[in-house]
Length: 425
Image (cartoon, rainbow, N blue to C red; front, side, top):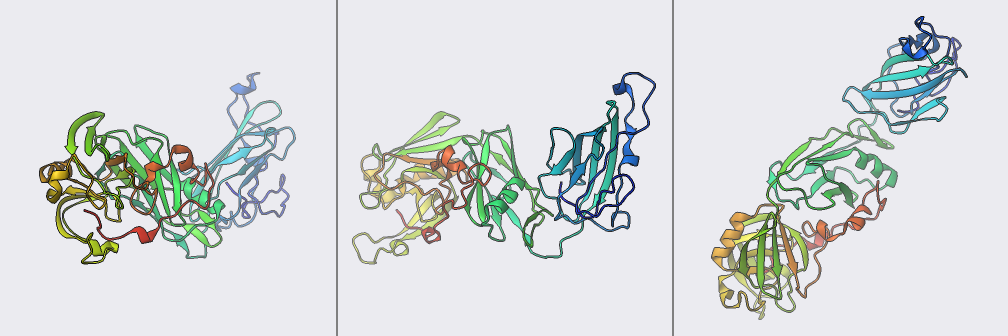
């Protein structure tokens, strides 16, 4: 909850001008039974000990930009519990002092919302008291709203698929990032540990500590609507996301052995002779996520800066192409290099195989499945900017990109220049 100028403490009946919502609680309450045990009494109505002044009674709305505070005014009484929740079910976090004299909010109120506040008290004799109040907050004058779009689209994906959140405006301030990140909820069934990572000022990725469980259901939503993020910046409504997770499918290419092994739920289901990137065009080592599948791609060397007419130039029709990087790394059919499959690396960076194997692979994998390359002499897969290299960061490094657990406002951002057209065969 938060400081609210529209609720003002008056002690008992005397108005006091303050900018807080103060609930004044006294000890002289009636309503107890004749039972000697005060805990057996029904909670007394604390209305006589709680008073309000200002615009609340006049139909005016509270300022959501002010924190909320509840105070016990009588030395013989104390607050035992305070809950505040809006009509959408969002709780307002708060802290109660050890002596029960004061409760204050630690999270912001939403604009344009209706709140119900329940205060539990205890007088000097241990008798319980209760007070319930409701109030509404006004809408911010500013029209600057932060919109959030979750990805990917609804559907079924592999166990490596990250959840993405695209922001309509940049958020750079660490404190504002905390407000945003705290409101972005991701839940899976079965439940797993996970965290957000700020890729740049307008994009976050969420992944579990390990891959998603096979056949899990993952939901993402935002509770940022109406919440103040920063000066003149408020959260807007966001469409929630629900996706399914398929089998745990991981394809491991050993570039030195010239072989790919495809595992489904831990069991090897196919071994495929392949060719990977040759010297100077080595395939990237590391874990990549399937980005999409294209039945046909025309690959030209000119799109990656190889001059036409050079010994390395090419212009080829490619079938059953499964994309794993934006810069043009695929798993695809390569019948022109059939003699090298299983024996030598002769491609320009892609993983090539026979047409029948490429067709099987194309039909077997889905977006979000994992393709891992080991024992290549190439560079490591980039964490961001060239596909989903998220899994190449260990869990500790991943958490440093969270505003809540790592607090690193300068997490590495994507290199948009890496988003090249198809390059490798």
